[in-house]
Length: 115
Length: 113
Image (cartoon, rainbow over all chains, first blue to last red):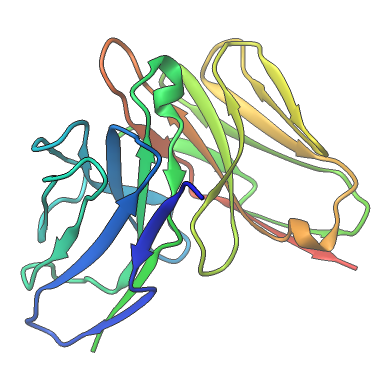
């Protein structure tokens, strides 16, 4: 089945450690996105990538890094510089075909807890 | 970033009732989308709207893309317990290049049996 997978579902990290969240899609989508969700908040954009080897900062990129070496994969690293990393992280992807490219499809999310 | 105002913030209704929620923006969007999110899961796309004035249905759900391109609403008819969740609106600003989505803060829907 086509879709977006994120792993792990739950992740615990000690303060001061970097951690990488995985996002893979087999939808052949060009664009991929990372969002952060906090309770009672909408989704805030961290980074997005339109094509391989290219990505742009979103609204809250500080303390995060990404790479896009393959079309199918867009891993997110939460670094120790991120001051409040405990949150629910969502990965999404979309095509690059006209207005339909605005339609993003989401993965199941990773809940990161910093201990 | 652009701000979407989604209301109401929460709704408590009885099974069988109809539900209406809306989203407004100070900016024009080319696309309006509605998603539903269950606890601990990713948002699932319900309806996508690509044209001003467009009215689209998906089962008991109906959504409209406002004529001014600054608003959208979602109606749910004859609600059932599985409608419980958070509903998000999103506006897309795709122009000549790949755009991005801006999200409302969500409407938490609770359905009493």
